[in-house]
Image (tube, rainbow, N blue to C red; front, side, top):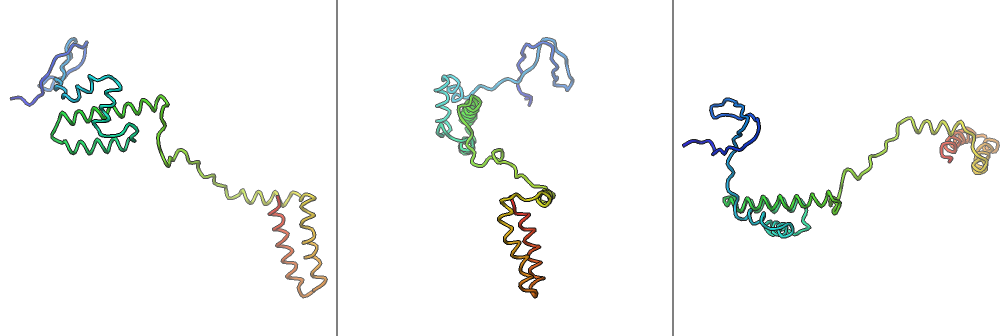
Length: 193
């Protein structure tokens, strides 16, 4: 009894084939092929049915709804495959049903009839725009160098004049008033629009 599978010769022009002795043989007319096992009856029933009927039968074989997600389909397939582990015709029917259902879902997606249902897609999120560290410094310098507008000067000038007048009224608070004036001046320049 030989352990090699049965071989069937099929016509094909000029292909390489491996002989049982391990030598590579060039055959211009014949190529050996593994004999196909007969297909189980359930798979044949799926193939015999027309498009919509076969698809409905595939959904019923897997026990899923027609709007099932890919995860639900694979989960049902795995669960049923584990249940019918020794029943090769039923396993072949399950594989064929899953293939039909997944192919139909992909066909509908490619035609644009359905969109993927994804809650959090990394492709929908926009990347965070990072600011370079020198940008705030450049903005501050631009504000420092450019003179303020007349409206802004009208808003800030009374406060600055009050702080400049404090040392004349209270000479002991001159250093504090000078420091406050200096800090307010930078704050007003930095925060203007």
